[in-house]
Length: 85
Image 1 (cartoon, one colour):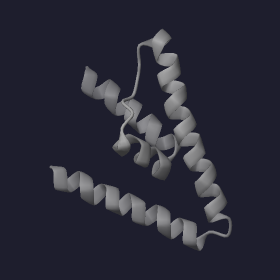
Image 2 (spheres, one colour):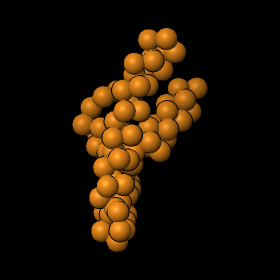
Image 3 (cartoon, one colour):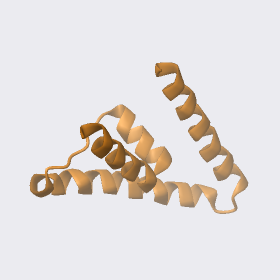
């Protein structure tokens, strides 16, 4: 199961790298997406005092939010909700 997650992470990273290279404004878009992902991570944890929903901050989550951006944060929240049921 661990190998599946590593393979999925490598495939996602390769897709993002290909998009950055091929796109005309890829580096700028990637940088803005990474900032949105990190900002969303801290916004979720900041509002967690009120809502009770928090995300663990470690190297894996931070790197995934840099690579995936805001959809990575939303995906983590959905997985947290589904696995927490």
